[in-house]
Image 1: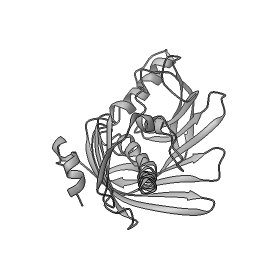
Image 2 (image 1 turned 30 degrees about the vertical axis):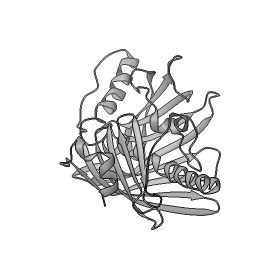
Image 3 (image 1 turned 45 degrees about the vertical axis):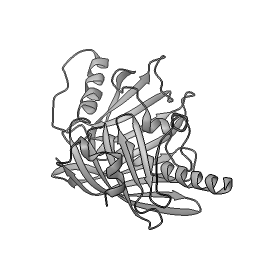
Image 4 (image 1 turned 90 degrees about the vertical axis):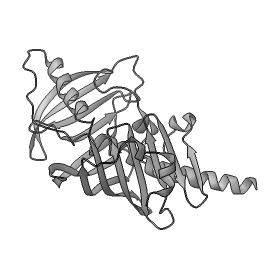
Length: 275
């Protein structure tokens, strides 16, 4: 009996680890670009104020819009490649629902994020569980992301010192390279973060995260910009660790904005019914 419970728990943790990344990228990417519009950065001689305004604009555009998407996530390792297909609904950064549609063994698994709480429903064992705080502090099993990437409650505006490191052409687009150094008291695992931001439309193009020793830890690249939901947006995100021969790719197949589902859609009861 104990063996069965352990296997069941390992199965649940494995699915959670593989899919939690989507909750993060959905809230940061799909919702973030939804309301983006061209603005001018505040004209000032203070470079840190300019950099903070750029990051603030990125942060502001992450809120208030709703979206529906169909995505695929590909986890590539030296010995195997695994692909997961899913449908997802989101309202701002507080609410999201994800339904796994493939592979068949995982189909029907559903994930719910309501503000700071995350739940998942596993149909094979007919269980709905809440993510415990202890798991939030752990690394994701077999993933290129950490739990801190998902549940990090620090503010990219208030918990960092910002500066424009340089301006350069990246992937054919004129961009700012913003250096973000966390405040000493901020709960941030990185020593610094570099963000490439397109000057024209404030699309995030690249993120490099460095450890406390100043070594590159991981890189996220956003590319394949195309029309999604009536807007020109990155359709693919690739996360690559600096010291491993592996990567995780998330790609949007469909993205729509302004869905009609309200907060009542994002409930535990709906997790078991949605298909």
